[in-house]
Image (cartoon, rainbow, N blue to C red; front, top):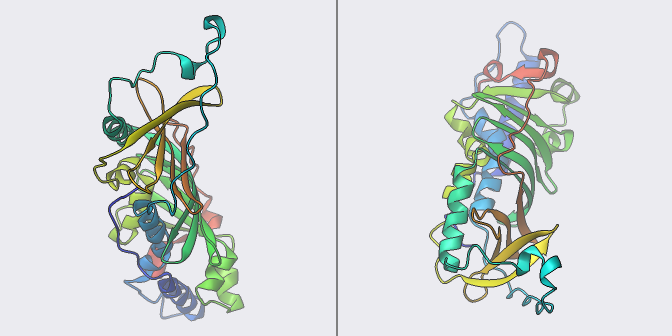
Length: 286
């Protein structure tokens, strides 16, 4: 789907955070080394993934046409897809815009899938929400980090591969970081990419006005009716629930790029990590 582009900071900036931790590790009396840019280090991958989510390109080739529908079943066992379509009175463009508006309005939604941006591949498995957020973000070849957000509190837990990809090979630094959550707040503007990635409304805002959409057939997924919308030409597809309140279930841009949406309205359950497993962001200059 065509969407508004976001800037993508360099993943190499992760080395700034490693440098800040290395300075703290080697400092005794002088105290922690300040680093105004350290926050941008950890948010770079999240920003890149947000950019990928906001710039899902058109599919490389048209999606295969749906299979012809089967003959209608007897009325007594008629499937949901064969019943009266609640979206008949709406155009494909209106269905798409309504589904985007419903994504924007939901208090929570689970999003998972695979995206690419500038040659990098990202895998998301996140429960987004207006007050809580939890899940994992991975960049293939770089590593991953767990993310927890509860109100204004934010915790990020990178894995060892993530830190090593940032250029850290010092055992003392790695031992300090290993298995630890970095604690900061959503008020820090340097973590704006994470806040944007965690808010369903912010994600929905990345989709520009769609036009020229066409309706496909209504099919069944897990017993529920699903309507597929197609962009003109070689564009991607949007699968929505075929209901009076349509919701986006899947965005597919081809080339293995796909986002799945589920559990609308079900917020993430977040428990703050214990103090023994956290490192204060203010101590390291972010």
